[in-house]
Length: 445
Image (cartoon, rainbow, N blue to C red; front, side, top):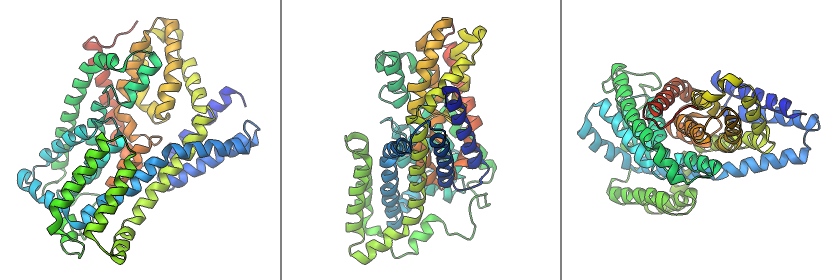
C-alpha cells in the first residue's frame, strides 16, 4: 500500500471514529477498538505490515497512555474519597456564602483556577485541580458541566503558551530555536488569550444564568430526584467533618507535589489514596466499600483511554499520520503558499481533531515549513500560527487522552464536549490569530 493510500486509510479511520462518537452509535472505547481493529486488519491483510508489527504498534500506543489511565484511576478514587468525607461540601458552603447564587462569579473562579492549575503545562493536572473542585458548585447552582469544561479548555489554552508547555517546546524543537525566545514572541498573543478566557467565563456565566442557573429551576443533565452533592454526603455514614483540615492539607499537598515534584502524577495520587483511606476509613471492610463505590466510573474511562492508545499507536507508529500530513501539504495551491501561516491557523482546530500532539508538531509542522520555504513563508510564523491556534482545541480532541480525563471527571460524554466547544474554540483561535497579525507578532510573506 503506497503512502497516498495509507493517508486515505488514516483519514477514513479518523472520520469514522468522529462519526461514531458524535452520533452516539456506540461507547467511545468500543469505537476506538472497533476502528482500530478494522484498520489493523486492512494493513495486515494488504501485506503492508505483519501481524507482529501491528501488535508492536498497539503495544507502543497503549504504553504511551498507560500513565494517563493510571492517573485517572487513582485521581478519581482520591477525589471520590474527598467527596465522601465531605471536604468539598464544606468548601462549597464557604464559596456559596461568598458568591451566593452569583453564577458569573463561579464561572470566573473556574477560569482563574484553571489558569493557575495549568501553570505546570500539563492538561491533566489542570483538569484534576479544577474540575473536582468546581463540579459540585456547578451542580449546586444547576450550571451545566459542559460549560465548566468549555471555560477550563479556553483558560488552559491561554496558559498553554508557556516555554515549558508542550506546544511551545515541540514547536521550538522543530524550528531549532530556544523555547524562551519563541515564548517572548508569542507573549502578546498569550495576553490576548487570557483576556478572551476571562470574557468566555463571563459570557458563559451569563448564558447559564439566563438558562436558570443559580435558582431552583431545573436544567438539562440533572435529575431533580437526585440529592445535591452535599446532601448525599451529610446523609451518609462516610462523612468525616472532624477530619476536614487534615483532608484539606492532604489535598493541597497532593496538588503541590503533582505540580512541583519530578515524579509520575499517578504515583502521587496513589500515595494520597493510601493516606486518605488509612486515616479516614481504617479497616479493610470499610476501605473496600469506599474503593468499590468509585470503581465503576473509573474503569470505564480507563478502558476508553487505553482504547484510544491502541488507536493512536496504529496510526502514529505506522507513519500513517505523517503520510496524512504530506497529503494535506501537497494540496495547497501555489498561489496560496505565501498565506500558509493564515491557512494553517484557520485549519488548526479541525486538524487537532485528526492529529495527536506529537504527529501534529513533529509530523505536520516539518512538512508545512518545508512547503512554506518554497513560497517564501517564514517557518517561525508557520510554527507560531500552529501553536497559537491549536492550543485550546487539544483539550477537546478525541485523540488527546487528557480530554477524556476532563470529561470523565465532569461526567460528560466526549461527543457533548466536542459539540459545545468546537465552534467556540475555533472562533477563539481565529481571534487569537487576527490579534497576532494586528500586533505584528504574525505576518505573511
